[in-house]
Length: 161
Image 1 (cartoon, rainbow, N blue to C red):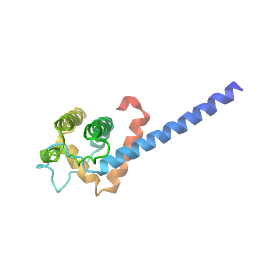
Image 2: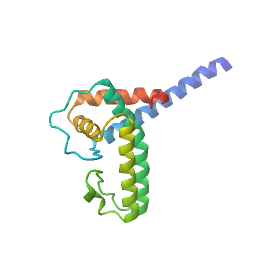
Image 3: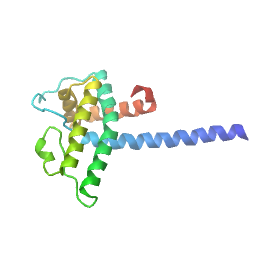
Image 4: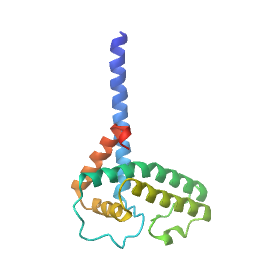
């Protein structure tokens, strides 16, 4: 009986982890679909260079590391400004988007933006490359699929993050 229980338990745990990874990927995918522009957009071209697999993996790794930081910053800002007030859209490359925040919340947003830039660069991308990929995702279903599949694959193998 013990032999039967372990495979069933593993199967159940595997299904649960798959669901968690799926929902985490959906959360990250929705994050990707909203524009996260970290730095200067002056060099983001209308003509986008072809992305290789390394760029896609680096971008996906950066997203997986940025998302928990984004959620933590969002929660801190929400706590600072009060749960009943709507948090304004914060765009790292637009300092004016921070102006409506109280100074403590502004500090959290600035720290998040700085940390996000470090994460992007530590994953082998420039800020312009990251922003370019983010902008491409808005209109490129094939790229969305590639990023989504890469996110799922990376989450299955924790050492790849």
